[in-house]
Image 1 (cartoon, rainbow, N blue to C red):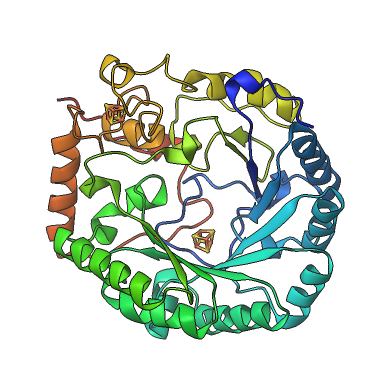
Image 2: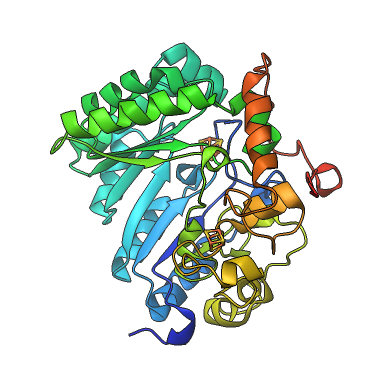
Length: 379
Ligand code: SF4
Ligand code: SF4
């Protein structure tokens, strides 16, 4: 039974970022620009204690993520602990470190589901985007191992200008790998993706084509493959209900134990986040300044407070508001009523028209706080 103050909402799921280490270097990675080092990671006992606290709060699902969670040698112990706590466990992985023996071991310890990301259907392009010379083959082998040991499989395919034209064959690949679900997720532009936006932003015509491909595939593959589709905010008129609303349903614990309301929240550089090494998860959920700041509707600008969608999209994405306007308390510029909306659309049009397809790989130590830039558009 949950002991959470129900007036502020019950967290349903926790994303446990076990490590920021990763064998890949995707230029759109949702990890922060300033990655946490291995020697700062919570140890096994600390993670098990965090999961126990999460269970006591009523959380039902734990998503083991990273970086690459399979780089943690104690992943099997953590999955077993989650199972003993009656938590549904999902492994979000690149697949690069997941051979058949390991997959079998994880299944025996109660792992319920695996989500593997793919960078492209084309091997060469996949390895180029991920920055790994053999990543694609290792991923395919991992996906086959997941199905062989009888675990359900989701394929996650982030799409952007470098791979969007291969969407049909990405869908074919998900079917071939016997996935039950495919997430076609247009890259969301904060953190690494914001930094590499000029290389990643698709043209509007590519987005429209991709949307038609998904609609047709949903019909053709009814009963075979469920396809989730996340469109890019820059071409939207209404924002998404990001994370179901800030600090309403979800929490994220970073490798060193910082607790965030969403995985990208550290891109809001004027927020401070509490740590599970200093406060309980419950205290952070209910009272942390970062959680309280944008929870509910009281913080909203007047247009949102008077809008019928205020408890549907909760004002959209705080990280996007900060990245584009320099103030996370502004409306998400994806909203057509935002004074920054036209600017957002113009960024997409300018970037997608560029010939340049150069990008920086996501690398440990590539950035520190002193050179993280914020656009800070003022209209
Ligand atoms: S997006 Fe790529 S680099 Fe980032 S954690 Fe996932 S696999 Fe690793
Ligand atoms: S005005 Fe605010 S609440 Fe209404 S649709 Fe736009 S972002 Fe959402």
